[in-house]
Length: 282
Image (cartoon, rainbow, N blue to C red):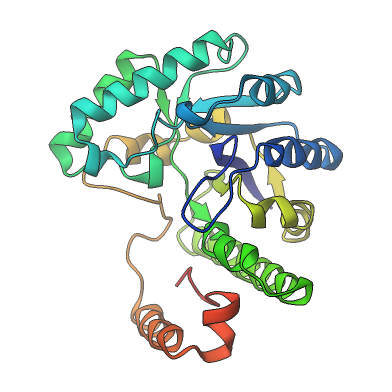
């Protein structure tokens, strides 16, 4: 049994090059969570995209909202001062919505980027804690964002379905790798997974939730996960950036496979150029 906390980034909708902005995604994914009986899920809001009715419906369903900055600019590119200003502006929008009346204040870094170096990361983290936030890292991704442009650019319904199937295959392998890494390294802390409010996640979300059940994941709350010493230690390690991995360094075999995958992707093997990367988790 592996406990898992599910979170969703870029609320209320992804809005990236090659990917459309669609407010209804937040409602459709909320409905899938409710139908599946999921009780705890935090949606991390980009303040400049905030749509009060959609966010209020999310809160009314009992789910939490977190801060994902105002403009979604990575901390390394923004710099500490501008990044904290962006976080503060989003904080004010969420306070206006009453997002923290029944939920803790959680912050997720855009692109999981904490800043350019240890000094910047420490300064930014201190500023966020002064605003009352606890940081919410992630330990496993299912790479949905990589498939969004291919899904929306599919030539027909059959190709769109093939992209979805490829995505779910990648998600299964990525989640299984997380299970195996935690067993191998004897990490008992709940996994923290994240997806995005994008077209692939919306289309595949009921199947993804079923996949989590099939793999033996049991729901955990974000508060439970962040209370574990595994995450508390990582949040005080300012050399760390990105995913919090149970295994910090990949073994030789994994590094060889990673290199082979990059070469295969460039060559377009296995329809990777058309349907998406088969092994992005390597």
